[in-house]
Length: 426
Length: 101
Image 1 (tube, rainbow over the protein chains, first blue to last red):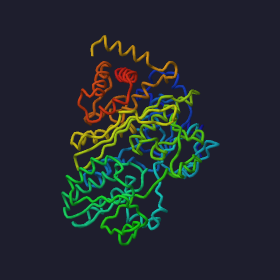
Image 2 (cartoon, rainbow over the protein chains, first blue to last red):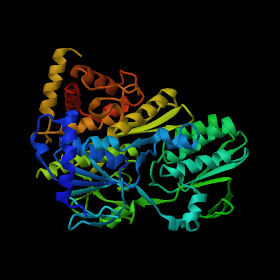
Image 3 (tube, rainbow over the protein chains, first blue to last red):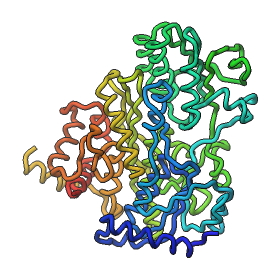
């Protein structure tokens, strides 16, 4: 069992490393906060929060990151792995950089959260006591809405690849092994879901792969939504101009179930057989959030106070990223989760110092999508806190999309990935 | 923008700022919204193609952001992002990045 005292003992060694690293700058009042923050989930939200808590507190706040996976694997850019343009190694980053900031990284699963006693129980590392906890578990799939996939074996055959890792590689393999003239079908759940433009990007880059390697093949998008959810004009233009006869888009095509053996999507009025069937099931906040007792809207997404990212009903629990009930026009994106992590870090440091959170948080977002191996389109927005409505709203005029797909943004998309991975992990 | 205009804008920015409510770390917090693309504290990853803002002169940063906002400087994204920040926030951001080594 690891209690606070043990943790502080263990963290003592880390403090020396941070000082040697050149972080022993002048100490302002905010850095005297002290306390122990446990961050669960080392993705775009959690890793960012962990690093910024250490950086901004100048090492005075102890941070433990609990993360199941040994390495970070990025969802953004993973569609290029699926399309054969990148490898998994290209989107994998070590957690060692966070250790240099003095973050204690524990690879384990959380099995229980007691928000009253402020303790988190781990599968194999005992218990952690915290002053504040940050939950950034990403998404959980609603498998019960695709009954035939509600078992582990079926999930190895009909893939989602909506969490980057083994599924990404497995989907790539299915596509590489598919015969020319085959059909790849992708089902898109009703919004809100993780990464609004993601399904359309995936369809586009797979269409690019088919066009260049298997030109008789087809991409079929079975969208539960009534229309393309994100960057519609730019995606539709790419499909018409680059992939005529390859990409077919079907709106209002909500998935009811699948026939696993026949790789068939069962819709309300239709059955669609595919050679590669890729099902993105509807999802909700990672299970951890419900375990904490945090209020979920519609039993799916955590409602947070946007000044602090704290759950609206459970004190001391902050929720980030895709797990949150998004503010208006705020996408469930890695970029946004990174911004959530920074707002949470700033607020937590204030709260630990006995002060109110920053009353004027801001967040930006830019989502780049590849439509082929090089050309990219974006959607961008700036969000600021509205004190009256108590939520984040897009600043009027401060949003937009690309004028047209272009290669320059292809280089920026790659540069963005390098920079945000460094911003959260090194 | 000449030095006098700049000084006037800065004075305006100060005057327009909220009286007591502003978080003392607001410049730092705002700068963190730029870090996703431009690197932590404006230190962009070398060779990744993003502008490194850390240590740029304050006036240069203010001018660039104002030009993006006014549509006078070509951009893919920044003409949209820059419109999200007030004059006072641009001042805070520019001063903060200029002070980064």
